[in-house]
Image (cartoon, rainbow, N blue to C red; front, side, top):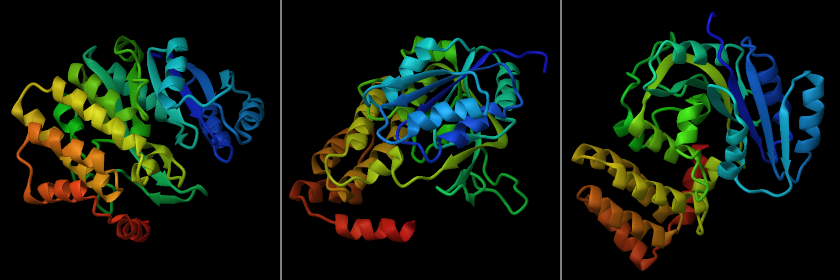
Length: 322
């Protein structure tokens, strides 16, 4: 490769002691060499800090290691690393995920082949469980030969990013650092980062896709995404409402409002099922600003007003789905 710009990998750890060595090893084993590694432990209460120290020595990986004394959350912790980042591109790597050996080189090749109007590149992921066993070989629909059965949208993706389910799996993405910094990094008032930054970045810049699974995403029962199903007091659903309200202000036409309504309607149902009734009502009010609610969406609103509880049934459904 002739162009080898510096790439920063910011690896965030919070109580990831069982997995952090795998994440560090995956950085150390990259074929691409021009990498700046920043590891941030977000106030772990397990043995993560010790595992990070010993793993860095084991794999002879040069890294800036920041051990925070208290847990401050993903958004604030990442922004600490982003301020230190010197790379042209930056990867946000959760300490329970892993990069395959070609990940950074393929990311850079794709980015360097595109223009300055591209703010991010994404690819595919392989799903593994807590023991590292593969559970699915793709985020997308593929045939038995691995050929994509769907067209993955790239370029101008703002309208698609608004919708649910997401266009891509979060661990597969790499950002242009300067654009991320220009946007102020992650919104530190939120409980999670990705949906908001995808919306804000795709409003201004294009996203590129390359068809390769270069990341292993670990499904962990205690992961942040699982907290979307938390009964009552759900901070992730509260943050998502804030993100959707911000997106409504960014929208410029009816088609974008309609795309946003898909996500709003999904989270309305989820808020109702998890007994976050005041949030369900708030989602319904926002839904009315983006589209005409369906009969069932109106039913969820009225059931939320009456505080009709269905979480025990929903919980059994979630268990069966696992």
